[in-house]
Amino acid sequence: MSEIIKCEKCGSEMKHYKKDSTAGMICESCGWGWVTTQFDEIYADETIYSVSFSKELAENKKALSLISHNTPNNFLTAKKLIENNEIILTGKASTIIDFLKDCKESNIEYKIEPAFPHEV
Image (cartoon, rainbow, N blue to C red; front, side, top):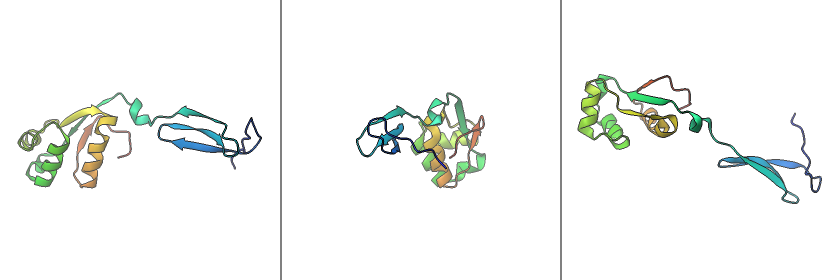
C-alpha cells in the first residue's frame, strides 16, 4: 500500500508524474509540484561493447543488409569482416542498443563482449 502524499499548498492528494526524462509529483487541484531528471541507466554505462557474428552469417543476405545498413560497413565489407570473425561494431550501450534490437527482431544471432547487462 503506497503512502498518500498531500500537497503543501492546498492539501489535496499528489499524483506521480513521469514524462520523458523527468519524474516527480504534481497536485491536480492547484498545479503545485516538483520534478527531477531521471535518466535510463543505459546512458550511464560507459563500457565499450564489441559486436560480432558467426561465420555462417556471411551467406545470409538479409542479415548482411541489416548489418550494412546499421553500421559504418558496406555490404561487402560486412561480409568480409564476418568471414574473418572480426568485430562489426563497437560502441557504448546507448549507441548500439537499437542495432541489437534490430538483430533480435530479425532473429540474427550476435556475439557481444563484454556481457551486455541491458535488456534487448
